[in-house]
Amino acid sequence: MPEFDLKDSILTSLNAQEPWPDNVKLFQPYEVEQILLPDNASCLAVQAFLKMCNLPFEVEMRWNAEFMSPSGRVPFIKCGAFVVSELEPVAQFAANKGVSLCSRLSSEEKAEMRAYMSLITNVLVNAELWISWIDDETYNAVTKVRNASVYPWPLGWIQTRTKRNMVAKRLKALHWHDKTLDQVLADVDQCCNSLSQRLGDKDYFFGTPTELDALVFGHVFTVLTTRLPRRRLAETIRKHAPLLALARRVDETYFKRP
Image (tube, rainbow, N blue to C red):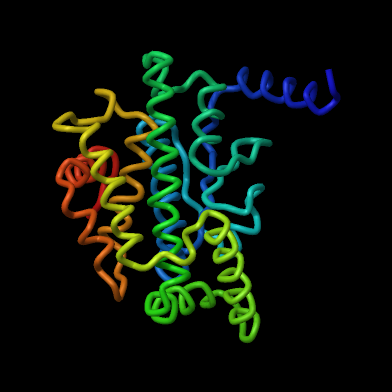
């Protein structure tokens, strides 16, 4: 067995033997002045997942959270000696400790769940990135201001321009960069339609909460509650009543809001 495989196996084994501690911290950018639509959706999805699992955690906001993350993406959790970022790795990390939302699902249902989660990543995440970084109106009015807010000038300008180029490169590789707003919204509408049909009139996609419900909640709730100069993304999602009902249900059940 290669050395790194042995190391990973040992760490996983040790991780599984230790209970979930009470001092887990979830790191994310500042909500009020800094965080952007795609990151906010991801952070909220992980928070929802942890709450569904009844796993204690404390949110800690840092201006440099993405640079602290092992993957360069937010959110990430620090659990003892372990640092884990993004929803699916966090869910696997919890499962290694014996806490899983999908343990009762069949192999076919788990595969279906992962397929819908992949659909969300391939459509909703890319649409949020396109709206935030490629659409000039949103970029100039919201993204540029919020992303640069935590840096001194001219570092904020340089970092924001660099990140826009990185997002543009990613979206070009995925054939999203040159889409029009109407094409982006059409893809979102089709994605939401598929999710709505699968959810139907059920409370949750598979009867009880899973990572998929947490992920859908994160994106739907964030889009609906984020102020943007263009409201068409929110208007597109509002057409899908089952997703709105799910977002409302998760919010009321797991988040105590004033």
